[in-house]
Image 1 (spheres, rainbow, N blue to C red):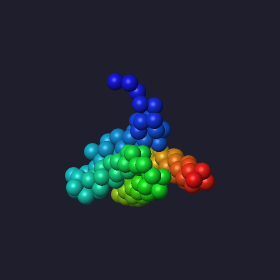
Image 2 (image 1 turned 45 degrees about the vertical axis):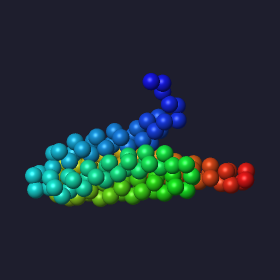
Image 3 (image 1 turned 90 degrees about the vertical axis):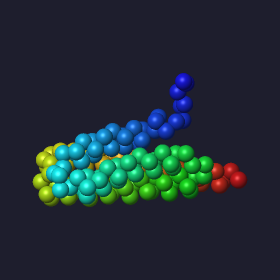
Length: 130
């Protein structure tokens, strides 16, 4: 099957978020048993929400719809930042590992913000041409 050049899997932000999701799943597996159905479940759902919303936004036809889904993705990433703080506060993982994950989350947030800005500019250009 040929490679779809504008496909979801070619978006850099999606690629990074997908790798980050894998890291979050790995961390969730390491959490203590008492967190398996609370924090671990929440972390997995938020990590999936990040990539799901990127996918949903990418698949939308109108700029504003796409922007809204990318904003949801950004919100889920912020949730994960708080979950990482819980892991740090409760000593569920080393501080260095948490800081590395938080740095990656910040980079993905930067990329999401950049993509939202790109969509806003594209929307304005589209309106100007009308």
